[in-house]
Picture 1 (cartoon, rainbow, N blue to C red):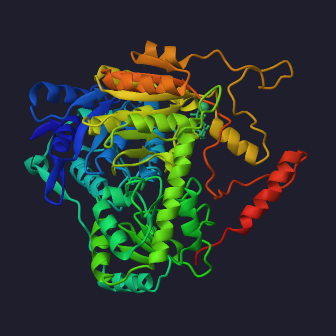
Picture 2: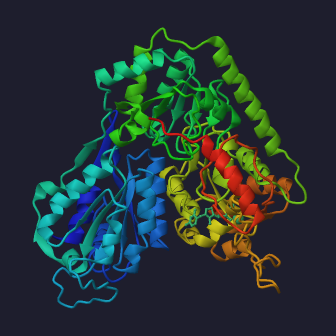
Picture 3: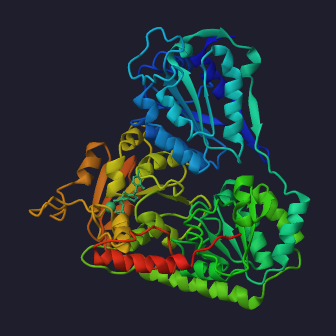
Length: 621
Ligand SMILES: Cc1ncc(C[n+]2csc(CCOP(=O)(O)OP(=O)(O)O)c2C)c(N)n1
Ligand SMILES: [Mg+2]
């Protein structure tokens, strides 16, 4: 079939599917694009032609910032448990490099996104083309090479003939749960417009089967022996539990064996918050219940977790000197961490196998009862934090409480950076495996609104509550316009506290006195300690087409959220919150190195405390 490379890419992607448990999904459900030279004549033409002539074509949507498009694709893919995603096309140069942050976010979080940046001329007839980076060391380098280290698969199509193998290689990585992440195919602009006789079978319907890889019997037997020897086992549920749709299998195993469950950020929602074996969040942003059980555990069973430093509290969370790890993970890279007994398998398949193989094993009743007591005690802490009655401005925990109350059981909360992810991890009451969507692998300011747009596109039947700080809003709010354009319903809760409450708190804890973290005028003394800035983000949101409600109190917030639920399109609920009220403590630690020497007393004190924390840190060998 004679097509341009651009037309071939569009046609090929429309024919790709995934399958798991007998259910088929379209792999690429849509396109985001921002056109410029580099894609307007190639992929742009092909997308137009598809929209006008091909009933099977996947929809094209305009982005406002290339980074935002990739965030939306990542949010979409996460919401769809990685079975479907979106493609993103950009112009060459800055359009392409704007995707680097989004690509890194997707790869860190192991989320499939397909990036199709335009690239310089393959023929080099007119180089340097507008926006070309000239590298005197070699003309095969372009700015797109910055996408290489943040992509799990990267190829540049210098010749049309290379396209079939590159496309197939890209699909393999997108759909492989152990390898997935950002996948980039750089498309030189002349090649995009070039015609070639592509073999017809390239465009046949293709189904990429996502396997439920079974645990290897030897590995399973070794894991079972370790768990059977455990007196104080603890399961740590990571994102893999949710992506693999293993929450039912997890609950069955936890109940049968009487093993309490704690959750990472990506794994939150694996258990309902009120299950008696659910200890909630673990680690640096965890609950005291989960962290107490982590400290005492003799066997820790990680399921689908990559053991980030927040989960291990910078390797201080697990304090039993003989603690051993069993790691169930589809990626051998993660399964091997902390000298764990590696069970390389699909989470659901492995949990089902463990349930059978552990028959008859059950923890002591007193152990299980203590888990239930601690979980209930934490929920009482949450209840108090939801109703603090802080004056004059609400505490953030009260804002979270109001949103949690306004959200239905299947609704989704979205967040990424600032003080809210930690507070949400501790305080959000999850009732559905897909109800909690906090991007904390990259914790990227600006993900919130763009990612939330992707979540809503992936799950139109759920209400999506995007929680965004003023700092993150200022970093990236422009996809509000995209949501308005697409008539997508989003409820954005914008928490105004005039700067970085999170980093302010962190700064104070390292003795750095909140330096440079509040949005304030420069004062007479030349320092940024003046009054807060006359910034009105509610008006800003209204100017972008959102319906805006302002709330000054928790009651007003609750009313605004109720109205937002009834309002079509994009709603922004603007609420002022007190940046100085902390969420309940975690009894945990995070390794943030403090200056070893300083003229400042605050730093010297913080350094002493830092050394204390360091004493609890260890290798799990
Ligand atoms: C792109 C990016 N830049 C910097 C950071 C570091 N950082 C983490 S939280 C934060 C401040 C967030 O401010 P805001 O959104 O207002 O939330 P708050 O801390 O006030 O809750 C910063 C600068 C980041 N996570 N992402
Ligand atoms: Mg803020």
